[in-house]
Length: 161
Image (cartoon, rainbow, N blue to C red; front, side, top):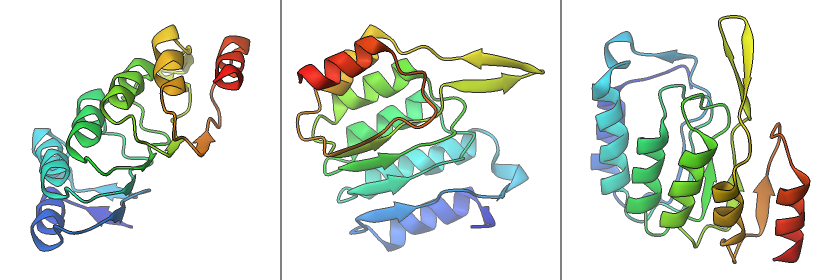
């Protein structure tokens, strides 16, 4: 996808209320007008309108944040698969809080655990809250932890469950 705007998100929400899969990954351009709060409202509208959504891919959407992920997981009652790679404003704890809203997830691909900030790398650590939330997903059949800083505690917790 080359470009997406807030209007596009509202249009998808209005025209396809029975949509089950939505792949909006890798936009190369976000409409400059929509880089603000309005675009966030479009994502919230999607989460409310697409009640039958089962799979979503929002990878490389750099505006995505913990609040939007929480709304998606909370409002999309049938959500089974979520892919949110390289969403710089989503934290490990944000993912953990969202997982608690959707314990029926069967597939989860989580973002990288580092980000660039003015020529320095910030490492995101796996937290006990994330581990607890992750192992609560009893129906999980696919877990992609690519680029995460995996701890022995995380692997041990997954194995024990």
